[in-house]
Image 1 (cartoon, helix red, strand yellow):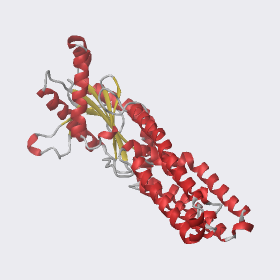
Image 2 (tube, helix red, strand yellow):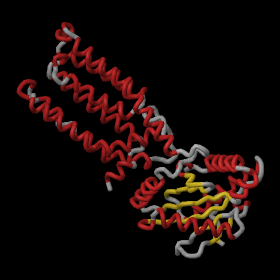
Image 3 (cartoon, helix red, strand yellow):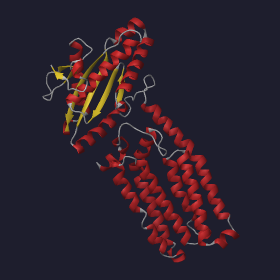
Image 4 (tube, helix red, strand yellow):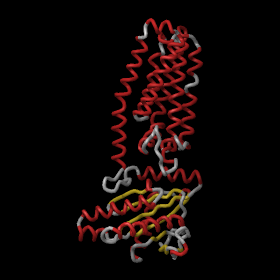
Length: 380
């Protein structure tokens, strides 16, 4: 279970994503955090190899480096533990890389500077950074590493550095080569991630990863003892619209509806186009009443947006909510679907829900305008 939470740390931050210098987009952050459980074994093995190497070289380079490199596993363990709860997980990853860089630079300084057999090891954290961050952050780290390496060599043995700087120059060339060779691979993967999860017509998330995303939300809700709601949104008369006015108009209607929802909803990152004219909204932490309120806001927003441009478009919405072990995608989807069809049978352009007893769907009647949109819905 801990591995699963680590793999999904990117989604346990505030859903209203705000990019930063280290991770400018959400795919950057998702990729960064998903890598942690995937590379944990390789990181630990790399640390063991480094420790074994220092141990074998002990008679020639001294035993102080062994004590120094014994510190390496600590940040790796702490990173895996706290990454899942971090609001800015990229900062923890960057701090871990900086710490390991510092350990290697100190090891180089106490084992001969430019003559140190540990000199090539400075490429290890640089390669790690290359796999995690885009060019600006990675390039900054490579420059700082180069400056630190030059300082470590100069402090350890300035005479040796002046007599023969070739080893240092070779390492700098290696770091530069890593900068230019790794970034196209990272950029290509980020483009693939973006293309794989976004619906090209609406710009919403698609089915790719929906089940996994729901499992993440469910796990978080169980840990925090909160509920999860889903709202299934279906455009009324969409088949008729396609048949009568053509698929171009149908596509335009989907884009208009998607735009209206993305503008209205705070958690639009959790809005999926799951096929045809059906959209699925996941609402972490929402109880049934608040989920119906959000669904009603979405229904009203769709009507306002579409009514202003071209033929009127309305939508029906089915809502359900669950807690604890009842938070399972398939049963909740089926209940939301039942509620959706109840809304359709009741005249369309309305919200219906499955009550807590999980039986007969009911239609939610919105509060009057005079009461304000923040009041709970009356359940009729």
